[in-house]
Image 1 (cartoon, rainbow, N blue to C red):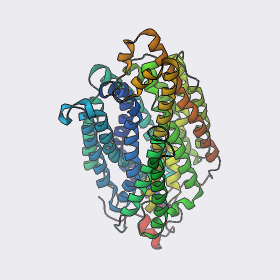
Image 2: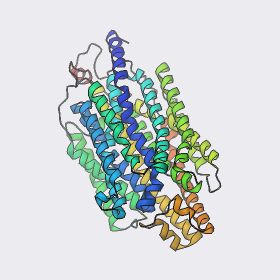
Image 3: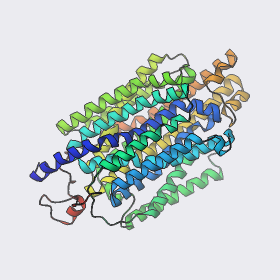
Image 4: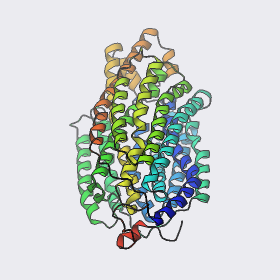
Length: 538
């Protein structure tokens, strides 16, 4: 480490410790929301109706996050991350408030409640897209990669803690209050994070030209949205050969085909293609995509399994996720400390991928007779795998780019995980709905299938208890088999994670703030002014 770097790192470390509480609260906003809403979903469906639309509540949120993530990362690079970060928190809070009012008398009652909730979740997702990417980029601004493992390990542990607290809070709210508070609870947390960061966060400004690639952002958003709609509607709402699906395919192909040359020509591309020349960056982007696909797509159905098939209360279903979060937290902390100490990281994504495959396989074995302790053991294994992947992929992505592209690297890492989640939620949701309809038709007849899947259906744990024993058993068996099939298909996605991770190169982590090749050690050269902060703070 040079003398300059030795002076920078301690100062940045103190800066991180000052702003870390605000960053952790912002991360908790996004993580708590996902887990709280997942626990409350059976009750939400019970009040607003539409079991067939369950996956769309998650898909709309993840899609909003996915489309906005590259934009948040780029405008953070151009205009300074503090203002952009605060704006994302504000949008997230507005979306949360609207979600809590969906289906209320303010908007005309519950008749269109599910549609309103889906639309408001998209708004909430737009804000969430800036939370994680800017939090990680802020750490990248203040801490060099060699030190970053320690802080990202702490933040991963906070994410795991939020994922533990989320189901517990969601369960308590669902059992004792009203599902609307699953969204309203974000408001005080968001307000505290906003005020803390407004007062405490001071970041170096970088000399960059202020240009936003709005055309590229629009093309990417249209293309990704079309792809998600194809996976959501294909084979369910519309036949694969229908004009609707074929039209969406054409829109996706044209949008993404035009997107590539646009990125090559504009001055400030929303997704600079040169970052993909780095082998590690491309590989961890693929790993992140597959991780999001398998993880978000499959875990979305765990609370439904626990509350309906296993008969647990919403609170208990939150407690039953503790083994997964404990495993994730333990490995995240161990990995963060080990990477900081040794500078070696290659083994962790491979380890995480292998263990995740085992966890998905175990969960695919569940049926109506699976006990809660067995499920706890299965998801603990899944948590161990997630802990080896979540933060190491972000660290490798950031270490692969120049400092001026740090926001792009952070947003790309989050983007590919989010787009994987979008595809996973929509595709696994389609698999679940198709399998559930087939199972119910076989066991109880087409009328039962129509009742459960119809937009007016309000089958939740309370309603199931009132059904005749034979009908209830048939429904629970069908539901358990359908959820298990989701985890079965997730295996084929998960197995690709360790395959790609095996090809990651062990590039030494930098001990200073500038990226390799971004500036000579004497601070000269054109790149130096892009990589090093000037004497100004926002």
